[in-house]
Each structure stands twice: as C-alpha cells, then as structure tokens.
Length: 497
Image (cartoon, rainbow, N blue to C red; front, side):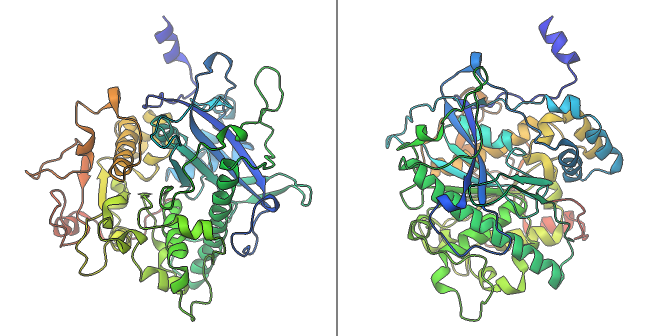
C-alpha cells in the first residue's frame, strides 16, 4: 500500500545516494573580509563566497531538517532550469507553473548532521571542489555531489556570482549591503565581445575558487569564520554551528590532494583555474589579461600534477579566448609528471556533446598530452543516450519528461556511471574512498569502468571509451576516424552550458 501511494505522489523525488555513508549538508556564506587575500579581486566580485558542503555524516534521520532543492525565488530558477534541458517554451512553462509541487522536492541529505569520523589511514576526509555550469547553482548537481560524499568525500558545491546563475542573493556583511546578482545573457557565438564577457566571468569564478580554498584551510585549522547562513535546526529553530566540526578532518594541506571537478562551464572553469595557478610563474609578459594571478602560496602549492581533474561535459568556447591563448598552448598540469600523465584526468561527455564536432575536438585537445609524451593517457568516455543535463539533477528528478523530450534512458544509471568513473580515478591516485559494494553495475568489477576491453567490446554496458588521439593505442572503443563518420558537422549546439 505504501509503495502504491508513493506512486501517486506528484512531487518528484531523488533516489538514495549509492554509497555506504549517510550524507550530511551545510550551507556556507563567508565574508571575503574574513579570508586572507589570495589574488587581486576582479571587477564585480562579490563581498562574500557561497557554497554547500556535502559530507559523510552520522545518521540523524529522525530529527533531520528537510533540505529544499529549489532555491528562492522559484520562478526564475525553474525557467532557467528548463532552459538547461534545451527544452522549448512549453516545457519551460511546465516547470515554472508548478512551484507548489516542486517546492517540496528535498535533497536526500541531512542538514547540519554530525560529521562521521574519517576511516582513512591519515584520519582525514578527501576533498573535492565542484564548479557548476551556466543556469546552475550549488543545488543543481546535488545528486552527483551527494553520491561522491556517500563514498567518503567532503564535496564543496560552489555558488558562482558571475551572472551564470538564474539569480544569486548575497547577504549583507558588517561592511556591505545585501545585493542580487541576476543572470547575464551572453551569446554562444565566438566574437570578441563574447570572449571578453566569458573572460570576465572566469575571473570572478577563479577568484571565488581561490577564496573557497582559503576558507577550507581556515575551517580545517579550527579558525573562526563568520558563516552568514543561519543554519537553524529543525526543531528548536536555533543556530547550529557546523563548521567547527570539520577542524582537523579535511585533507586540504597536502599538495595535490584536493580534487577539482565541474560540469560544462564549470569544467571549463576547472581547466582555466588549474592552468592559471600552475603556470602562474610562466605567464608571458604580453599576457596582459590573466584570469587570476595567485598571491597565496598555499594555493600555488596545492595545484600539482597529482591534482585529480574531473571534467563533466566540458564546454570549450571560453578556452579559445584570444587573450588566454597562453593557457590554451599549455597542457593540463598532470603532464608535468610523466609517471602521472593522464592517469588522473577524466573527461565524461554526454552523447549530445560527443556529436558536437567543434566542441568535441576541442575537448580532445584540452585533455591531450603534449607531443612526444610517453606517460599514461587521459580517460575519455560518454554514456550512450545521455544529454547535456544528464550529469545534473534533472534526469533523476524528471525521468519520464526527459525521456520523452530528449530520448534519454535510465538516468540513475547514467549518473552512477559518472560517479563510478570519478571514484576509480581517485582510487588510482591512492585517494581512499569506499568500495562500490551493492551498487555495482550488473556484477561488473569496479576497476573495469576505466579499462579498455582487449576484444574491442564495451567493458561496461553503454559506457563508450573514445580515443583522445591517433596515438591512443590503448583505446578499444571509438576511434577518431569512426567518430568523424558518426558526428554531424553542426557546431551550433543550442543549449545552456
């Protein structure tokens, strides 16, 4: 009877996170004035930084406060989310006119729950920083971030105040008033004006990432930070101080241990941030418009060849900005160590982006090793039937609608494939995360997710390995020549990033 009634509930619901740990969450907004200077502040930078932490927690299900998925105001966010699907105006209206139902969607994480003691040998939790794409925010990738946390990571889901979100509300500090950052409409056409506008956004994003890194260091050291979010409890409506629980629990001081990840424009942000930090001392004198010039030695020491790089549906147009050509010419930091090479680089495309010729070729160039490199190759895959939104929360929340509109299949499995691949990259870099356990896919071994098949067949159903270059002899999936025959020539993919 309960199962029957649950099917009648019109409110979309998330599946449980797949890992063995219960997941807690806390919202954080910190005044920039509370943080050490990490770089010169770019134009229009906000006076606070904002992020949500997903973390392994002690189970407090009986007293847990609901965590709402839709931020306020709902209508602008819902319309923007519909556009992210690449849907037309009728689908946008469908989402935006049901705020009452959608308001009750909750994230399957427990607000302000006590942090679980880390089981890793160093007694610290590994950390991942995640950057959202256009029309996104810290909530829109809650399932992939929460899934990673359920396997034993502390995941920092960032809010970017660069005009890439539908709307961002910035709280007042002791020195600055509250303000609203609305969405900025920027064309996807490659013009000088578009490149300049995306560069401006990337400067804000990179600055925010550097400040959030500084915030994590302060939190782990047990130093007080002013969290502007109220974080009240469910029952007593009293403020709960959660950040102090993370003191001495985060693996953020050892160089190369933080994982950097993002989706679409967030994946682009990740690439540009890592290169800007790692190659800061190599910036040529004629590169007059850098995205960030780091002044924090703890940040420059953190980004190393060992830093894991997880890129979900990388959007590459901003990488081609003429003023950032010096970054485009340089490989990802991983290749500075031939023993690592592409071992810690994972790029997972959607099938839709795989078929977008120009962007796909740029993805290959962005993750490729330099010429004459003899180390490990990077990992490049796409899940069959996936769309650009498949790595966000949309697929698992609205499986019927998205399957009918965009012909996707089995959205929960699509996200699980992404999660498994990301986890295996971390294991290969000796970062301790939990085993897949009962959520293995059809009895397949965990490590098979990254390994090519000796027979040329799929190692994991629907998980297609793609060659990065003609020299990628380990590939047993789609070759470049096969790819050229399969992809259409239209580079004007009309969807948000």
